[in-house]
Length: 234
Image (cartoon, rainbow, N blue to C red; front, side, top):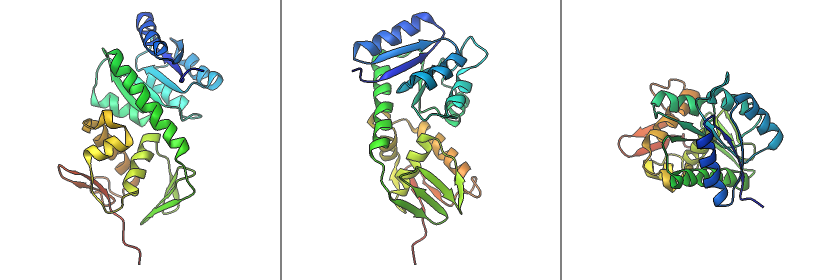
């Protein structure tokens, strides 16, 4: 049995061959398509374990739209490929549900490290579910259902947003170091990628805070890390 089945969505044949050769050499099985619409169909029909998805496709549907469509019915991990690591592209990708980014050109070693790290996180989420609930002031996190509510109103979070909130909520009123959060949520390979952490903190605040510009739930400890501030139970 292959280690995992990976769908490659890329319109450059040489790059498809390269990615496929790198992945199959270490035991992964691969599928590929150059069309966005076909990629969405293949996710539904083939049920791969992960997608490697190019942002720019020579098709009417780009990678962002593919990710958005896939997220309507699937939570499988998505790694997006981009020629430029612009913050606007990163944030847009995270917003539509991407789990990670690779900037072209990338090495075989980097590709494998990212694929394995994202798959590992995904599998840990499945095996680590419990029936517990975490409460923090107006927030309720139902761990078994991966459901978050604020004052009874359900809030949709992406996979990584939820994982980051869960890590903060597991240590209420405690400052978690940047490196600690990055390692726990993304993996040790990401411990220095502060841009990832800042982007997701920004998104969480936008969704959870009454006034994201003046956060009262997710508090910054300047130069150190972040804390989920929860009122003490009386």
